[in-house]
Length: 636
Image (cartoon, rainbow, N blue to C red; front, side, top):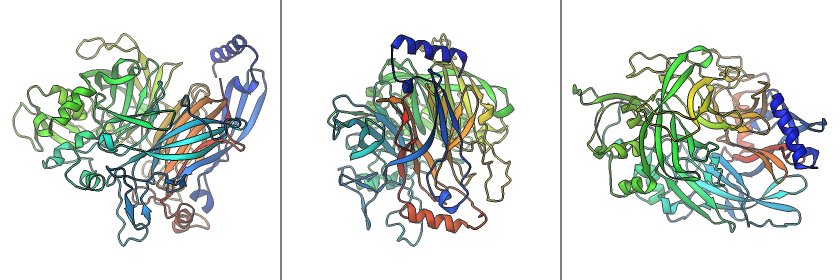
């Protein structure tokens, strides 16, 4: 921690009067763990890392970390299936084993709800946990199937609300109730990926990989499209009919408000645009949001709300990458192209009025030889687009990435994942899981703004946030948190081996970040927490990176081929701190891994252990990193 931060902590402690030493830390240091080596370790979620906390008083303590599972997918909590899937009438979706459940818990929002009661208020405090369930990987009736087919995007997604009791003495969290969150009033949930707890105490979810409205209308897909979703299957399982689902109802931001009695209210925000959204991250002004756009040939987007704490109306922008260097993951200045201003009500009115892709654009998948068309390359492939008269607003908020490309924004980013921010230093952080495709030098691309060396381990970028900025049209941007530059953090550049493999089949070094995905920043620990999702290493990890000391420490290992998800850092909740962390799809071979074996084990050995521990890969964990007894001490 910097000298300024140490002084600030000491002054705050003095001003606040006598407090427990455990609440006034000025230095937090993580000591990492080795990579897994046994069959049991490779099949498990565990930590052997430690953390040292030094307090303002000068006292230090070293704590052993432990992973605590709150629930698992397929568990029964108070009679309800965790991650259980439901149709449009809120009836369970069944297979021969019973109610189908997601095997992919993702974004978490641990929150305190005023007026909510604990089971025993004398010993516990009540908390609520909203969890995104992204999809179900294994098919219905698995493992009793003759042919394995990934069911990604073929079933509706879901969210769940877990009522939590927090032990007042140890901070240990216990799940006491679970309910699915109904999306029946908002046309169902679609691929709920990562999330953020808003500053106004709501869960800001996501709907990743928006289905292509063009192909849903029957127009052939463009060459190079990334869209592999199956909205017809989704519609059949959710609505009972393949034709019912409207693609413009998905790819939005669901906001979930939890009431003190455990009921919930879901609103989908159309004003934030429609992209393959990983998550939204709200800056300290409560108005400015940054959004990751996952997949190939995607963009970086910013939203500025009209009012703090209200996402129902605002202005949407797309970034232009102006490259400065290609070294160590690259750096660039950022310019912002204004896409438009709208409200949820206005865009929802267009959708409910029946607007279609063909109402917005003329399109050709080959060069029409007509200069009124513009060639673009985006997540949905290489197309020639012509905007129809008066359809600017519909294009900006329903075909956000295509319209951004049409206006000259950069749509060459690859696998843009998590976003978080550091309020004290006025910085944001953005994850790129792999530097590939459009992020490399491709002279034939329509723009070729980004020209970086390939790195399958990815990079994490630091964005400087400033006030007093104008968009490319010369209009003032009404925000004090406009990103003006994007610079790779050298210590977090992916450890890709350049196409080579180590003896166990890993294509990334064990002691470097590889395929970062989730990211969350702790203001009080001055630490970035990073969760991986890579097919370039056999086990994914969660890392802690101190932004002052620049120390990187591995603090959690996941079952082989599983993805780290659900990262949320809670610095002080009832006197305790939590690093929320889930994992998805253990043993998922279709998407991940090529374990070549190690002394005394084969891939089959590890997968057998995974099947035994994680119920034929249907069971994944929702939990947190704490101490052996419970939670980390709360930090101020």
